[in-house]
Image 1 (cartoon, one colour):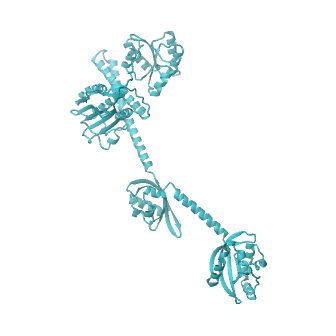
Image 2: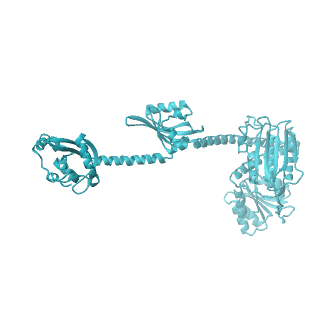
Image 3: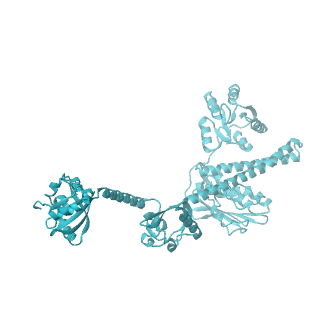
Length: 623
């Protein structure tokens, strides 16, 4: 805009002189402009510093020269409004070098010496704008964090408890949509489960201004209840107090903690049961060994003591085997020796093993078996174990005059093994967990039922290994129980042959070397072998065993694994290296996991026998 150079009038000069101190010392830019064309009539020192012009140069400019180009279209309307009633607005001014800076302008029209004049007080607001921008960016980051938080966040007014805002995660957790939450309170939404708990939390907030990790119960929109950890902080904004709360769903964590406590409780209970179950057979074994030392050989007392030791040793062996089997099934380490078997024969043989037990207890025992052969691809030993565990369980929880029925029949493509009894029944609370390891019903100190709570866990595990299922049912305590196992049947003939013993096994007396560092174990096994008619030598370490094999090669070596100095694996490898190919090597060890058996075979052993050795197994092995 072209303009004639402006000169200060005598009146304006007099006005400036009277207010010289204010104008000269002001940090704000003060400009006097002619109304009709915006020419600069006067400017204070702050203006010369801000724009980079001298006073004389400023007096040859108009306000258009001092405004950023993009704002100049607003000048006319702003000057008109300023002349009428004054105006306050923000704009952008331009320096002599072309750089710009944000300003806040307060402009008002006055009449000086008959001339319409505009007085503008211009304040550089660069710092304020930077602060506002930083605040805006901070607010954007806060809003982004608020929205993206993995935890539910809500802000409530303290005076009435109304929700001011909630994030998306709050909606997902509470199942309340945002539009139905805002303006409502926790009371309106019925979120708190325990109102006394709410009052305790609110009292703590009012007294300290914050709450950290308070464990509370919240009700969701659908009525389900969750356990949450809540942290809250009070703050003020625009003179009003608010509450910011962050809630974390810890329901899974609490369930895990409860499960861990339950597992710990069951572990302690199991250790107590194990101690009891081990001491029970150990007591008669110890008494019987005393009797054998003092009774007349061959007497009734001696025979009875021997019978007790055999029976209780079998019981101990069963306990250990059950523990190992449960562990193997849980770890997926059991390998079935499947073959084509008639389940009817397997179940019949298993039932006969328990008939005398039932009769001795005064329990009526009946079997109802299919007339037809039921062929299945199964491990006969494991199926026998499964049926035995079901019958053993029935025997434990039935009393005189109760009845147990074992049935085997076909249902579709499955064989169904069912054991029903009229005994103690199962508590409905226990029924869903009855097949879990170490789970048992209530027991008195007498513990007449006994056991470790492993039998049914093995039933389920063995059934599932055969692609079958196990199910339990009971009408409640004192109303009997029913256990059902379903096993798939073969639909076509299976050509796989049964396992046959080695054809080259020799009959008659054998020369046997027993290698074990435990003298009692070695000598007792040697005595068993001598009673079976074999010639036996004993070695208590590896070098001695190797020396005796070289001097007088035996037919069979029964070797412990855990020997001092030289392990059984090393002995087997050494014997194979010296050419003892015709000697049968058998590992005899308490290490009886599948990986232990495999390692023994890889070391050169022909087979593996788990301790304690069953004399009948030894007899079959050497027969």
